[in-house]
Image (cartoon, rainbow, N blue to C red; front, side, top):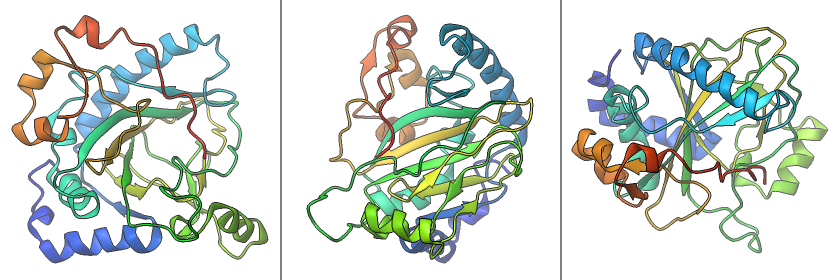
Length: 271
């Protein structure tokens, strides 16, 4: 399937997907992205991973043998079937508004030797002093570059924990009241999730890395300085008009070299 997927025209179906995120914290949609594009991204990504492993000394930067890598915002990562995907943008618009912001392109990759992460959220509550949670304000759209199975480090999520105070959610998970569920996806599938839900990475017990891409979206008024997309002007002029609007609050640079020379800022990720 490519970005002209007819499901994006089914208003009732889009609303169902958005409501599932509101209720449970996430929705998995199958066969959204073209597999040939995913395989191309994986080929390019493995070169980035090799270089990052060299820089990090092979130990990982998100725990043992787990790597967070921000790809350069250029082809093939800017393919319209991915960053201007009708289904993704239809569901995301329902959750954070059609005037939302595309603010993150990154990857998380457990390799052989990785471990269980601690249970965590990817952001804080807007008002931690309040005992209620708000509607969605920040989303992650995840998709794997290889098929995910129980042995290669799938994400584990606890449903509906985005609606609970973190301490209460963790207590219920640890007591067994709320189960952790493995997220098993194939190439081309996507996961749209509220980043407040409790989750963790798991060990990759195979000798093949398991890259997971994240496209981050937020409401227009949310700003996290450590989460941004550095966009070269020439790339901004190439992407579709709709994507350009979603990118409007990100820093723009005159050259690819300037856009790609920054050090990774998003080091603190677990809340």
